Amino acid sequence: MSDVSKSIKEGVCAGLIAGILFAIAQVVSVMAAGELPVLAFRRSASVLLGPAALTTTPTASAIVIALIAHLYLSAIYGLCYGIYSSALSAPSRRSTSRQTIIGPLYGAVLWLVNFQVFARALYPWLLALPQVSQLVLHAVGFGLPLGLLYATAELRAQPSAAAALPAAIAIRRRRVR
Image (cartoon, rainbow, N blue to C red):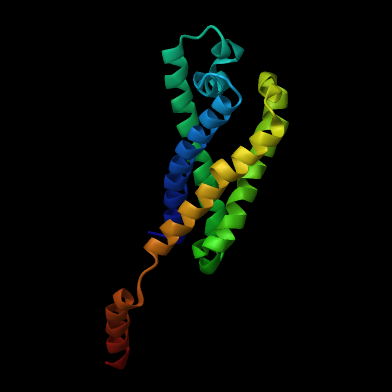
């Protein structure tokens, strides 16, 4: 598997897990504000269903649609992260300290694009959310886990020196003959 393919696969997997953690953070944020947890799902569903998802859409439908939309977007954002990260050096991809910086920056860029560009044009009702807390949630609740999960996957995929040794010996033997 090529480095880019591997990086994309790792990005999608990390994006899905980070997306689940982000959804939990969104629910906790809504509850901390004194609202019902289902509001977090209704907001996510409103990206596909429009503002009716906030009020008139049946709760079960809103939750199912929100989960589908949320996981789909998490996978896409993870895929983009994997593509971006494939251009980084191997030490940067594997460094948890570097990914601790890159991931939250990526989450902040997602917030910027999603709220300050797309929401302004397509989903103005989402601008009523506290933007600073959404920025923090995107950076810390999605970007940070994304970066750390990606680095962990890269470290796991790194061939150990012992595993590479038999291949190196075989190559050396072929050259000697």
